[in-house]
Image (cartoon, rainbow, N blue to C red; front, side, top):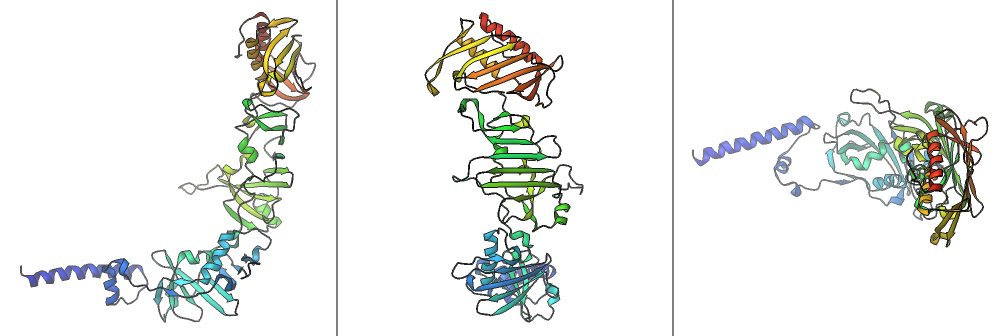
Length: 499
């Protein structure tokens, strides 16, 4: 084969490939003439392609006075920031609400420096093919010097990176990057600050009171800062807060922390409605909420209301039973008069029950703080405790009962069993009948006492009053083991922790 024939064949292959490429371009984009210069750019390195960008607006951000946006969601009015910095950028329809400052500022910045990737067509005879006869959105810009300009946003280009845009009154069509235009398609709710309560800082006030009221429970749960006159030992892993309703209980320091402090940094996935009316609240189940959470203290009083759940759909288009989010409102935070959609994982208040967070210790008194432990009823023993040192240096020196010295390690084991009077079997509110068959008093040196009274319920259950308040129902076999351990500690027997 001679060189001439080779050249013809190779040229034909190149033209065929190029023709296919041009056909694809014509097939997937807006029909337009592709000249030889365009063809050469296709086969050349992209880094050598000419810059075809067009600067449509070139202003300072503070020169943008107002932008009126119209879109399928209704639209909004952007007001620009002042050159002095006295006035921030804002959204007129969101007056009085907290704004996402970055998102709002982007509107002014993107408009002041509006730049097209390239011109799609100059003097287009048919704007409809670009979606500009019935635009998806439009925006009218007023500058501080009085100049006004208006733009239409049409269809998105085939590669989904650019929109076709033209200025009102002009037939020149531009391709502008989607990232510069996305805010013109958004509803006003998009620009609301979705952080309901700010995250904790060094200046955050002390924990005050957390109340949870739920329709599915017959009681409220209330948690408060423990302001007792005696200090808590860190070794007991007990929270600095306590449950005060429906019963008094010490909290597990690990399991309760997320619940107690979850309100801080609470952020919504989406803002559903601004300045909601009564009908809006009813639509989202917030006229009669499923759960109300009040978190209050010095300088703050937040009320979170949780309404209907939001359910995702599976691949078959069926609604998933478990809600992935809930519609909520919050009071006590300026600028949050909205209905928000919050992820279900951020709302432990909907499912928590006392057994999830209370400590396994019915009482927590450190043994070296205790003066004596007395029993009345099934047992009438009194254990007197002697210690040396104070505070963290205090040590158990000896224990007596009826004047008899007891084995100190054995009493420590006995006391451990006593503190674990079970709490997890179930809280209980109904006052028992009759008299207590056993009363346990743990009396501390500072005058504080914890009194545990046990009442017969059934053959297998006993009702417990803690400090005069009906609180638990426990297995009676714990009492049986307690009585055996009392005898064991007095006689030098083995203390059993199981029951």
